[in-house]
Length: 244
Length: 154
Image (cartoon, each protein chain N blue to C red):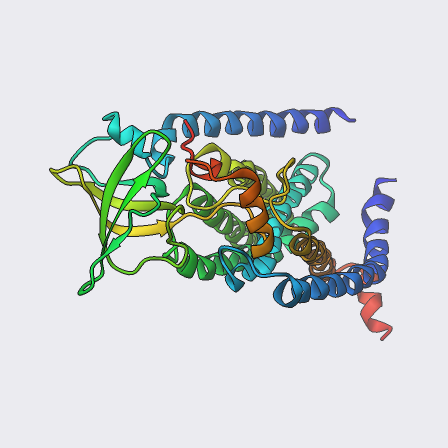
């Protein structure tokens, strides 16, 4: 039974992950393209910032995915530590570079926005600092995984780091509410009075959803590569490549 | 759930809860240092140490901005609902600098109670709207002496 679970599910996952990735990629790219076009071209200008506010159509989805990615890695890490599920380990390892890229994108777009609007590329306020720590946590997971030879030991170490680091996620999210920061408060997750006009909000939500699907697609693709590498000595992988 | 799994669950869960509690305590202890700026009323109340550099955040008072014609010196007053502090600054101002806008300035108080800033940053709020909607909202609500995004959190 255990044998079935361990070696039966991985080839199955490998087979079904391809159509799933495609099912994420197509609507993901379409939604993101619509959202970014709607934000950069069609949405009205902002009354304070003019056209400069449009960078948020990249910045906000990236920042959202930097948090979402790390949280999902921590959940996978928890599952990997307690239940020793191989797929969870593989997800954790595959999601790290994708999440790190979105974190980097969020920091860079925010910086480009900050120079003309705030008057500085960077300030050490709570939001920016905690987001930078998140980037280092992602890089730590990647480095840790590369540093340890045995994939299972590496995955266990990465799971622990992901779980420890996830404490930073609520700190990032609430930093603008707990402390005086230069970064402004939340717009989208705020209830009550709308903080953003509908014409601006709809493309933003589409872009965020589209980017999220793209995140899933890229992570799934990374998982497939990771899976093949880890199972390269198993019979099913060998058969996969000997047949053509 | 097997016994080993339950033990691992307790171990991982306990580790996580302990660590989260430690971080929460550390952040509470350091919260004074994470505060990004002081408000004009806190300066008026003498809660801010003199002779040290700090940040001050407030609204640029309407009609208070004076510019020099020959250099980049700008004078304005930063205010919250209770007090105001005169500020002088020499340099380029951010795009969002205007009267009624939330600003964070970095510098120190001089002997005459003027805040000499060497960095002026604009803090924008979380609202995004087109100019027409902004106009309509303004007529509806009027302006606040200290919008929520500029209020200090204590």
